Image (cartoon, rainbow, N blue to C red; front, side, top):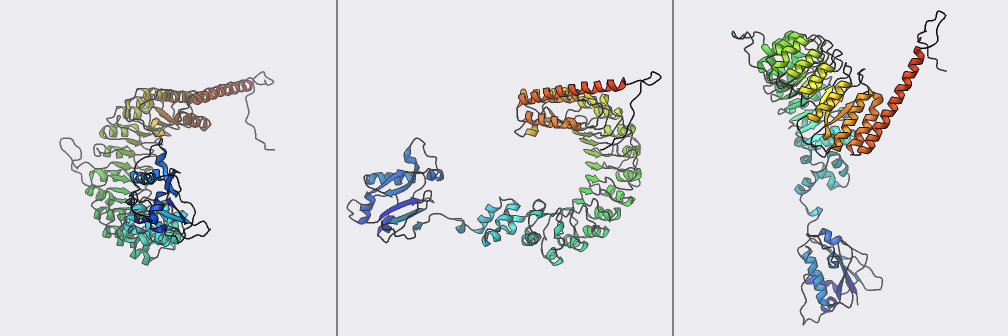
Length: 627
């Protein structure tokens, strides 16, 4: 008689099925006993069914965790054998029901029959519950929406169905090709953009230079008509293609055209005509346009909040007058632009014909809404520009004046008291500034909110002003003071200040959350290894105390010290303080030995041979010969 073996999905062994009559065994639901008076063949087979333990695959798929102490919880196979009763088989099937494997569960069972003669046949498969093929497309798309774009592109080659689903437009509402454009063929990238079509709301093609030949005018005309934001920075599109994109997307709010040589004043005129809802415009490094095109955009786009126009030729006064009348721009970047003078700044904040308040003798125009103002490398500006800004930009949070070489302490002394929300200040390469400016920063109303300060290459600044800034600016977390006159005293004060700072933000599991201050002090001639060692020692002590607030210093110093600093920081962040202390001691011993050796060599050179008149001969600079 054939001996059927019954297997679950979790433990399937090879077998065969003969043409015996055992297929009717599944006519009775699992767990139900057959009538006592039944003398059929099913009863005789059922009577000899037993159960034995196998792999724990099934309990892992159940609705509750099995008891590890009970061997009855790992049932995954039922086989025909003699010696056990019908009640034991019923208990085994009931145990399946207890774990969610009853008739209503998704367990798939196989019936495998072997008549002992070696004959094989396809096993019967009983499917319970839906599979991937049974799911509707909406559910499949929802599952695939959790994948990254590059993962979707890879899965699209699995089958025709996956290719259709992975290129469904609903998955590409945000198409950021800058992350994977160089990993897939250009033709596939072009087809992806076309397939996503009208579903795309946010398009980022930054750096996709290979699309120049595969993007045709008819493609642009029929794809991507509902864009809210578009970034074409670095692309090599022709002017007609850029104009097609602008004309087909009148709902554009954010557009980035940075670095495109095809952008001209006509492009700005089309933007003003077709996209009146623009809020952010980036045309930096578009050297084929000037302030006349920007003026059209400012006058037509009433919701303009951000304007980036770095490295442009801006010498037109009407642009500044348009910005004054609109008074909607909050972020204005004119860094490295040619032609901006003090008069342009006056038109920006006061207008062409300012109204003077008779009581204060100041401009009566409403205050500007500027939050971020970038005037880096506008070399024609002087202290008069800062005097025009004082009192007219109370909401200013970020001010960039790097490399404006004509600025002095007097101009900043007048501006700083009128910007109480200032959190970032960049005055690097302003060679005329001294410690007076640092004292004014420490006394200003924005001292408690200042977080980022750049004073690199201000060679007239030293310890006295920088120590005062560290004491008064409790929120300072980034300080760049390279190529200045500061010394080890500034580093020692920084370590002391961090110990006494109030709690500003808690320490999290992220290693970088332990840093309370970042300092850039390379190429400072007065910074020695002893000051760097104090910083390393302070970082190790901080980790020993199990702190609740950031207190480490992330230091960027002289390149010969930097390798030791980086390795010490890694050990401290791994909480391996003993190795960090040993590294710091060995480095200190090496530096002291090197210093003593170099001092001895200098003494020998200083007390060298004497000439014929009894005078010491000074060292002479000789030529270096390479053999």
